[in-house]
Every structure is written in C-alpha cells, then in structure tokens.
Image (cartoon, helix red, strand yellow):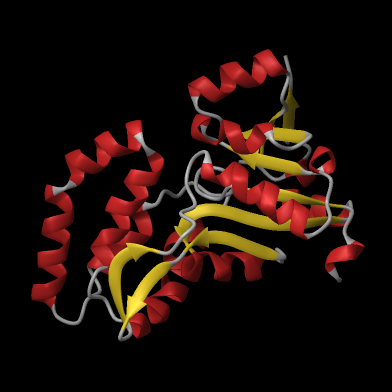
Amino acid sequence: MSPTAHRATAYFDVDGTLCSTNLLHPLVLYLVNQGTPAESMFRLGRALLQAPVLAAAELRDRRRFNELLFSHFRGMSEDRIVLLADEVFQDVVKPRLYPGAQELVDTCKAAGLRTVLITGSLDVNVWPLARHMGCDHVIANRLEFAHRKATGKLMQPVVAGPEKAGLIVADARAHGHDLAACHAYSDSFSDVPMLSVVGHPACINPDARLARLAQSYRWPILDIQRPAREGRRRETSA
C-alpha cells in the first residue's frame, strides 16, 4: 500500500507498550555474546558499575539515559550487532510480546492506518519486530559506525522522551497525514508529548503518573495483556 493510500498513522511505543521489555534486555544479550568470554565479562562488569548513573539518568533525562546506555556498544563490530539482532528478537522480544499486541496493530491496519513503531531501541533490533507484526515503518535510534565499528554514539536525531513528539509531527507531515486523525500508544509518562500531538492518544499498561493523567484527559487505557478475541480486552476512560 502506498503512503497516500493510508488515511492516517498509528504510532506505537514498543518497550512496555507492545511487549514487557526494556532497553536493558537487548544490551545484556549483546554484552554477554562478545568474541571471547573475557571481553564479555569486561563489558558486563563495566555496565554494572555504571548502573547507578544509568538509573539516575533514566529518572532525569531520557535522552541522556539513551546516550549512556548505547555507549556500551563502543567497539562492537557492525557484523556482530546485525548478527545478534535476530537473536534479540527471538530470545528477548518475541517471548515478551503482549498477547493482544498483534490484534491491536491488525485493528489499526484494518482501519486504514499506517503503522509505525517509534522507540528508543536500536533500529537493527526493532525491524525484526516490525516485520513480524506487519508494521509499515520504524523510527528508532541508530548507532554511529566508523570503519565498521560502533563509536558508542547515536546518530541524530536521538529518539527519546519529548523528541519523539517532534519526530511524529515530521513523519505525519511527510506522509500528508493530519495529526488530528493520527493515533499514538504508550505506557510511559515520559511519552506524554508524543501522546499529546495526536488526535487519538491511548495508554497501554500505563505507569502511575500516566494513568492519573489519562483519567484527567479521558484518554483510553487499553489492556492487551490478554487476547482480545477472548473478549477480555479492556478499554477504560474516566
């Protein structure tokens, strides 16, 4: 289907929204699958030492958190990162997909919506999920490479927090879609800007702050942790 055939776009956060993963899950798999056991242990140990700094950054600045997290890819070969991407999907992401996630994406597609995954995860890890779910596009973070080795830096734009809202605006405009007709789904209060720029925001498994905001703004709260076809999908609004 060509871009002009879609009437609008549905944007989906991934971690915590469509599946019970977080950005740390794929990183651990990469760290423990290096060329030698010694290198794996060194990288894992360094990441553990930085854990308190990462935790503090996650609370204060999602962009900084992403930059610190992906700095641990520095020196990894592009070939190894690509090779492990399918393993990340098969072993980390796919088993943690919420049972109703596919049905939600399919419902959006049946309504004539273009479907886009927008996430702070790496693009190389998100595309297998997009193909599995039949999504049309991915907006995700991209590692910078030099001489086929990761530099530890992210390419611009960094997909995190408020920046996701601007990326959605730009993407919708590029496809000629009215933001008022677009949909967005997330679980995190940090994604309030992303939810606010579309006409049809919805929350999935929202954290406490997002749940309170959803009730105030009468945003739907969806339960996709059980299959909708069993009649157990829940949509609430205060």
